[in-house]
Amino acid sequence: MRIEKKIWPKFFQKILDGDKTFELRLADWECKPGDVLVLKEWDPETKKYTGRVIEKKVTYVVKTKDVKFWPKEEIEKYGFQIIGLETRTLNQIQNEVEEFCQKHNLVYPPEHRVLDLVSEVGEVAKEVLKMSEYGTKPLQFREEIISEIGDVFYSLITVANYFNINLEEALEMVIKKYKTKN
View (spheres, one colour):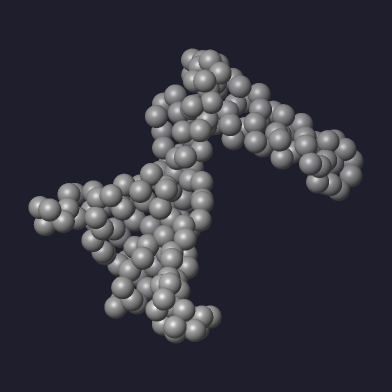
């Protein structure tokens, strides 16, 4: 189910930036994991929507009326606090890689980045061959593949960053494409 709700600009921006990974709301409506929360930025001063919208999938819901961990007196004395837990989005990872490349002067033209990506994919293929002793035995996991896949991911991010491609959006687009094929 898609549920539309207003959200003030300062909270909208925190969600957009990946800093706010929770939403505190009055429980006067129902939602469950799997629902999509459509947050429409609302300016309380102008009392109008700004036009910015963000969609987030609901992963967890707890209602405080259901929470019976603490005595009522302690709740009235201290209240509740909502604690956000860190999650890293692909956007944040892309920004970290870009900052790292800038800081260490690892800024190369796209041709070099793509060659690096292809080379790293070759390293993954080589590692898979080693895991099966070049096809002579059943595949056995080797820890080395983790680093090789990390190298591929890093190289792919540098290519995407060069072209200003948002990897989250690109991945969502491809998933939608594959879903329509089935």
